[in-house]
Image (spheres, one colour):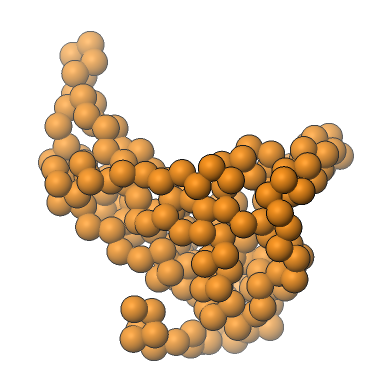
Length: 190
């Protein structure tokens, strides 16, 4: 309780899923890979949360959360190599041809990011020095408290990637794919 206010905090990880209007950094990765515009990636890993899971988590936090408590909402930790493998299968496109070591990608980002900020300040950046640093840390989140106290039940990052891809196709943001494109049967996503 903060100065008379009942506050419950829900903390999310990197969100992925459909209806990514901006799109987010991860949404741009999905869209750019699907359009063949990604030339390189770096290994690492991060904790992701499916968009539907974060919605479920927020609703549960409002309904069952204890005032003054924080709940971490995550779906699962996934490596970038695994994401690339899943995206290859989902999009039918090969992963980027260059798998750059994290140290090299950090050096490239430390030069490119300030230049892009000055020359094209409104251009979204896929990999900033901070993003590379976080991927290198392989940070894991512990959402046991949300599971135990709220009844939070995360689903699948792979399914969230498929939903993101299908949404980008349906909204015309992926070129060369029919809007009725069928990715795979649900059994293939298990």
